[in-house]
Length: 483
Image 1: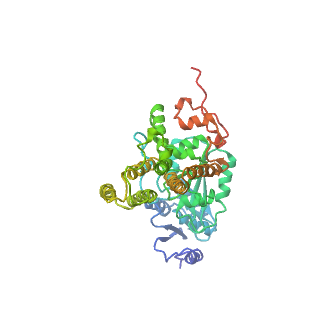
Image 2: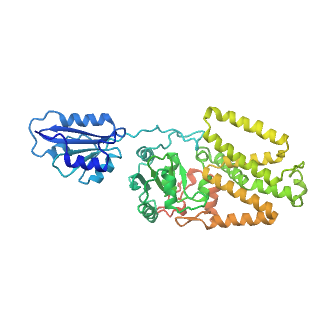
Image 3: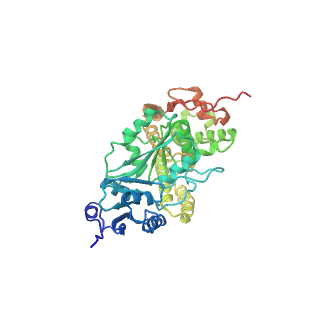
C-alpha cells in the first residue's frame, strides 16, 4: 500500500513546529506518478489563488512517467520565485514567513515558493506627515510593499536592499537600503555589524527596539535616527547618501545618519516654492525655539521684574494668586500632556468634544477660581503650539523635557539657573554623536555654507552637491548649467 504521508519530515515538524497542533500550519499530501508529494503552508499568509494554480499544474496529465521526479516537479512549478533547501530549520522559517514548501518523498531537498500575501492596509498618506500638495502613498506594515514604493522612485541599478533576520523566535525581516556608489561603505558595514549580533527573542516593537540596539540611545531623550512614513522622503535621503533601515510590520523607516536639524525638516517645505518653503521653515524654527525657551524666559521675567526693560513692562503677572507661579506652570504644562495622551486614546468622533471641554470648562474655570492666572494659560498654550509645530514627535517630547528642566533651574537659581540650564543643554547636544556624526552639525562644528542650506530652502537647480556629513562616495549631485 502506498504511503499517505512523509513520516520522517512530518514527525519532525510535529515535534518542532506544531504540525497537526496549530490549526493554521497545514500540510497537503498528494500521490503523483506513484510518488508522494507534500505541500506545507501557513493559512493566512499565502495567496490561495497561486497555490491552486501550482497544484493544478502538478496534478495535470502527463504523457509519461518522469524518470527524475524532483526535476520534473521543479520544472512544473510555474512561479518566478522558486528556491531549494535541504535544511529543515530553513523550511520552517520560510514557511512561517509566508512561503510554501513542496517536498518529494525520498529526495533530500525541498522547494520553497514565494506566494506571500500578508494581511494589511493599502498605502495611504501618513497622519503625521501630511502635505497640501504631494504624493499620498505612505509606507505600510509590509516590508515588500515599502521597498517597492522606494524602488518605484529610484530606478538606479545600484539601489540595494540587504535582508537580515533579527530575533531568535520572531525571525523579523530587516532590510538595509542604500545606493551602491553613493552610500559610505563603512557606514553600511557598521550598521550590519550592529544588527547581526542581536540576540533577543524578537523585535515586536520593531524599529524602535532595533534603534536602541544600533545607536545605544540609553536614557537620552533626543532622537538619534529620523523616522519617516513617506516614501518620497526616504528616497530623497537615499539619493543624498543616507542609509535607510526597513523593518517588517512597521510603517516607519529609519534614516541614518541624522542630525538635530534633520528632525526640524518637513516635506511641505519642498512641495512649495523656495520662497514659501523658506518662510515655512523659519516659522517652524521659531515655533521650536518658543517651545523650549518661551516659558522659562517669561517665568524668569515674572519672578525677577528688574531684568525687564521698560518696553517689556507688560510681561509678568497682572494679579496675585495664592498658588506659586512655578506650580501653575508645571500643572498647566503637564495638563497639556494629559490632553495629548487623552486625544491619542480617544476615538476620533469624541476627541473634538474632549478638546472643547478641556479648553472651555477646565481652562476658564481654573482661571475663575483663582488656580491659574490668565498669563499662564496664554504662554503655556503658545509653548504647546510650538511643540505641535515640531515635525518630529520624538524631538517635541525631548524639547518639552528640556523646557521643564529650564523652568526648575530658573525657579531655583533665577538668571543663573537659566544660563546654567542653557549651557548644560547645549553641551549635552554637542556631545552626542550618531555613527561618528556630530548631532549639531553644521552648527557645531560650524559649517556656514551647509548651515545656509539648513536654514534656507534652496532651489533644486542650486543644489549641486550632497551633504558632506554622510561622507558619500560621490558628492556631485548635478553639474552647474552652462547657460
